[in-house]
Length: 91
Image (tube, rainbow, N blue to C red; front, top):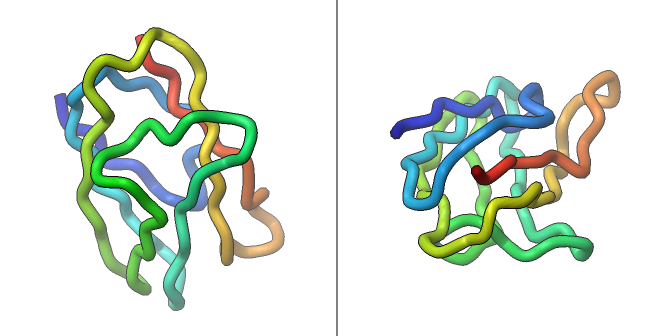
């Protein structure tokens, strides 16, 4: 399955192992996605990722992850949007 995920705006979203993800950055500057210290990194390839201003970046959900909530960090979102943590729910 494919997911179009808004880097700053999407706080919790669902996916399955090996799903494709396209990150969308609506900001006028790059935004960084990185490992949250409280959680394993759920994406392939390894991060961190820098999503360009008004751009996209592609990755996948790792194979073999047990069902769980996986947090990741996002930096450089607008102050009115909470930067981190964000969560992908693997089922």
